[in-house]
Image (cartoon, rainbow, N blue to C red; front, side, top):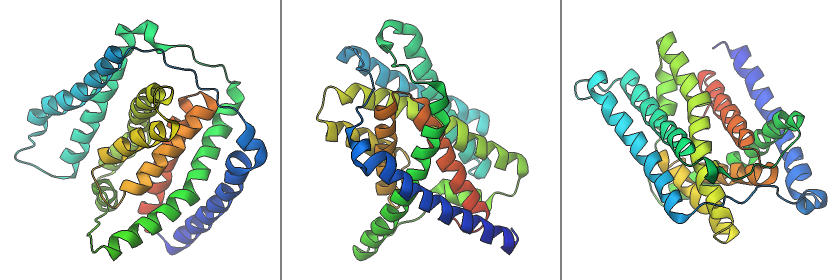
Length: 269
């Protein structure tokens, strides 16, 4: 990418970081924000039904991935396309698990608090912007800790795949998976499923951190574990505050898109 474009992207990123700091104060740290009550409704779901939800999601992910292996000739290949398609298959299977649970347990969904629709996009963008400075700081601190402990920390495979992608159709597929499929699936599972169930049954700090750590562990990368866990907490707080699962879904998609733009511009992580 031409140097001028890269410089413009850096400037835009700095402005987003600044906006994130302002929004963090306004919507998270200010006295008015701290007094705002969350509107997330309790998920009246039996423990057995929740375990059934987990079983459907996990089995759906792995079985769909296994079913895709012969089609992708995984044993003989190992290229970027194969890795991306198997990842997409896993997410598709998880999403099928969520859909299957929804159809088999319609009454377990519980009421969803009404939020005026015009607030959806501003709330989603605010969540994304607030996450940027926090994740940037967490990444720097986590990397410094790993370096101090002498622990190797390679970037996520997905980051390397985007940086090395040469095929335009493959790049488009990767962007679709990262900005649409992954956010929808992961937010429905970890925020709409795990967090919502745990929020009214566990201490709040544990309900926030446990699903976030599972979310980070899904990415199987030590270098990104702490930043992604923090990102999971931020998305859970946004879901708790708004009661709309679409808010963390859109914010997640924006966050991934922002990362992709930085990588393709040569200024990414």
